[in-house]
Image (tube, rainbow, N blue to C red; front, side, top):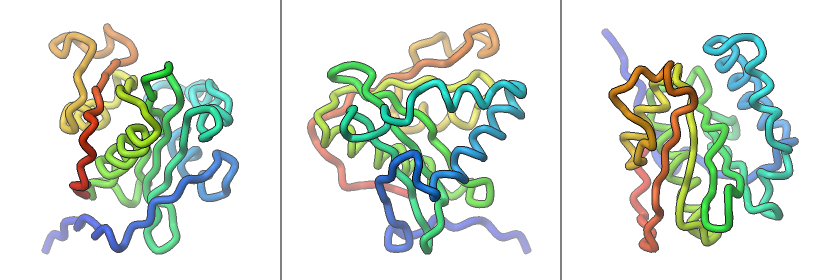
Length: 175
């Protein structure tokens, strides 16, 4: 018999805001670094160090969120101030043992909600050309590609997306 991972109920998940230095963030950073390195080469860990940790704090217009299940981080993501009206999503992550459960979709929805609450009207992000799962996530969640979707992603480089946030706040966060 084949089992299919069931999406967690909202009651099973807790969303918390944490600084990058919080020990609960270590699995996120470790797995992202490993994932980037496996897809782009050993220097990919530098991508995680590109932005100072402070850019992901409320004082600088950013945030880092984790989804916890029974106290353990299973997914997370962050945004930083891109400009006065735009938040830039970064570090979208789902723990390798918890993929295919809709957790990344939940993280993106939570980040959008938080960005909207902070007055941002637009979200911008890029994902790597060797991350078809991320590309699919953003297309499926209403992001507009700012590149030719028919072109070979390897010829484009980072794939940019944007989404304009409505002033209406949806309470429908599907997992």
